Length: 226
Length: 121
Image (cartoon, rainbow over all chains, first blue to last red; front, side, top):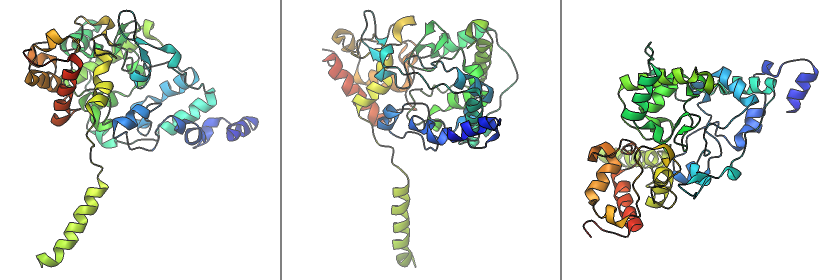
């Protein structure tokens, strides 16, 4: 942080540094930035934030810069939902009191950290296998594929108020994630995270391409701007 | 020649085995907590945090009457291959890529403790 302050005093953007120091000093208390991924449930349960050692192959840089300045929860029930739910009147509910907000970064710090994260490129091999096919899908057909054919809404929100709560929301996925990552993770979630809650549904490539297109459609809706 | 090399190969094999972390078998309790509870609930009663918007409610694992109508083989199949494999909802995904067969067998035993029932009783 001293480095950033010093840079600010000199009128130099934090982004000018290849290493802001924030990632290695502050982010590592909650995020795994070196790998490997959690290999046991004990390790997975202990995670405080998503692994970032493949962040450069996962996130869109512009989204990172924006989100780090105004972080909003992506997983409604936290990283491991089991730590953040309680028995409710009709069904289990999110226990909001147990959830912690992400730290907010300044524009310069967010820019610098995002640039560093984009250097973390584990699993280049998995990304290289993906080919995103050009095309589009109507929201209706995308929803049909997602909900009816594959049942993904069981765990994911496709609108702010519709869908499952244990997984990450997907109505912002198109803005947040690189399409090759979306395709690769759906194709084989365990190749990225052996203990992810996400099942391998053995989706065909055609369906995977439709998911990518659907998330793009969803992320362009003004109601889902975030 | 083979006899001279064998100890070297043996040592290499031991070192290689030590270098590759064996995928430890998880307990059924932990697997249930990690993967099943999100839909089937903290108490296994089908009222999981994800159930709110589902068209078909998750199975209540504490319902002895309903669960005793499912054989162990059927429970194994639905966990491994998903709901559609037994003509049920696709909201229940296939977990073949997550669990080993042994872990699924343990989960079936775990389900029997939740329902306090056996098939056909």
